Image 1: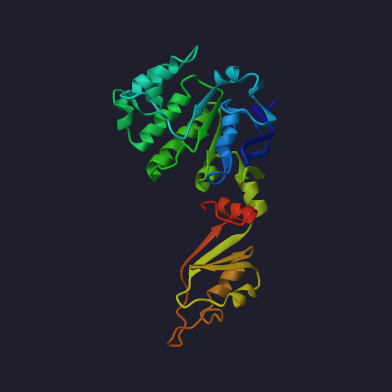
Image 2: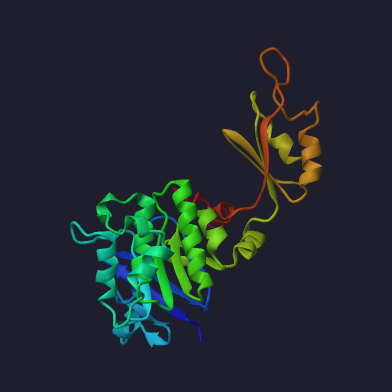
Amino acid sequence: MPVISANGLLKRYGALVAVDGISFSVETGEIFGMLGPNGAGKTTTMEMLEGLREPDEGSATVLGSDVVREARAIKTRIGVQLQATALPPLTRVREAIDLFGALFPTARPTDDMLREFDLESKATTYATELSGGQMQRLSIALALVNDPDVVFLDEPTTGLDPQARLNIWDVIEDVRRRGKTVVLTTHNMEEAERLCSRIAVIDHGRIVALGTPASLIAAHAPGTTIEFDAPHGVDEEAIAKIEGVDKVSVDGRVAVSTRTPERVLRELLDPDAHWLRRGDDGHIAGIRDLRVRQGTLEDVFIALTGRSLRT
C-alpha cells in the first residue's frame, strides 16, 4: 500500500479552483516533490493531505487512514513544516522543542534534536534571533520531534542564501536516510532535481507531468542547449537551417537546441560563420560566453506550459 494515495482531490475558493482533480501516490522512503510556481496549488494539496483543509471532491489516505474521517490519527504520525513558523514571543530554541514535544504522546529527546540539527550552541537563544537557515533547521526539527513516519515540508529553503540552502538539503537527505518519507513543495528546479525521487509538475491546480527528474527531462526536454552572446546579432533563419538544430531563440542571449551538439558546435564555431551579422565596420565579432548544458526541469516546465517557472 502506498504511504500516500490521492484520488481526484479538488478544492475551490469561490470561483477559483485551487486544486483541480489531482491524483498521485507516494511510496515508502521517497522524497516526493511538488514543483510549480506560486499559486499552482501545491500548498493547498499538502494541507488537504495533512488534514488541515477538507477537499471539496476526491479522497486521500495517508498511512492507510482517510484524511477526512481519520485526520486526528494521521496527525500523530506525520510531521509538518509550514512556510512560516510562528512561536510564542520570547521562546528559546530548547523551549520550542520541549513545547512541541509535549503535544505528542511520545517525543524524541530535546538534546538529541539539538545535536542532530546543529542547534546545541543556540539552545538558549530566542527563536527571533536565529538566522534564516537556523530558523529553518529549527522548523524542521519541530516537524520531526514526534519521530513521524511522513514529513511534509512546504518550500523549506525559500529566501535562504546558497550556503543555508545546501545545509537544509543535507538535513532533508538525512531525514530520508533515517527511513522517513518526505513530501516537499518547491519552485526551485535545482532543489527538486537534487532531492526528489519523483516529481509532480503542477500548474493551475493540475499535475501536468509526473516522474523521476531524469524521465521528465528525457520526455519533455531531451537534447542539449547551446547558449552564447553575439555582439552584432544573428540571422535566426540561417541558424535554424544548420543540420541538427531543433530550435533557435534569441532573448538577449542566443539559445540553440539540438540533439547532435558536436555537429552543431562545429558549424557555430566556424570562423567564417555566415549566420553572424557584421558590425558597422564590416567585420564579424564572433561569439562570446558560449555555454553548453543538458535539459533541465526549467526546460520541462516551459515545454509543458509555454512559460518560465519563475513567472
